[in-house]
Length: 242
Image (spheres, one colour):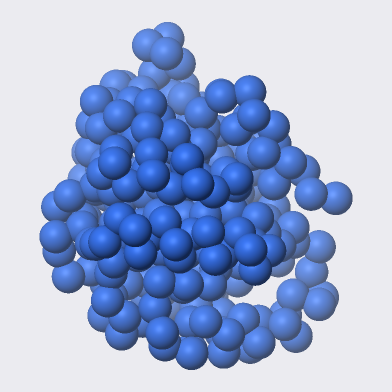
């Protein structure tokens, strides 16, 4: 079954934007899970993404197990590498760094994941991952040894090539802690040319930026750093303020 992907596709068709909260296992205090999830439930959040550029062994699995005890929201893996997989999650964004040219993140990590994935019931969602210039050298750049894209035409062509290759989602990522979010112009250009649901993340720190991304065509917006730095941001995204 492809429940999570189908839900994203349906929400995209109905123009009902989704909000994913990204939790980095390496930065998250697992002892605060209950309080954090309680705030998430009162917000517009529809998904929990779990992952980071560098995460210690077994931390992802431990965090997912705890999250599943506290929430019915879909828990989706957003892994930096093969070590961040967890059988108890609901789905996996099977990321391919299509904006880079490092074979380790184009195919090698994916091959390494196969023995693990064969033994799971994870919903695997092929996702074209495009790193966008966020005006900051991010951990993703450092770990993957790839450069972000800043040319709108190159970004659109990369996304379109991903569609032709059969990916199911496009993820435009400015990087954790980006100084500049993915611009509305980039989101609009990709959305106009590519017939796939669009995920946008990185650098979004307030409600205005969130709404700008939605209005430009983002189907799912991912927020991580803003919540890590200030959990009161949940208040700005209360269901009562939709």
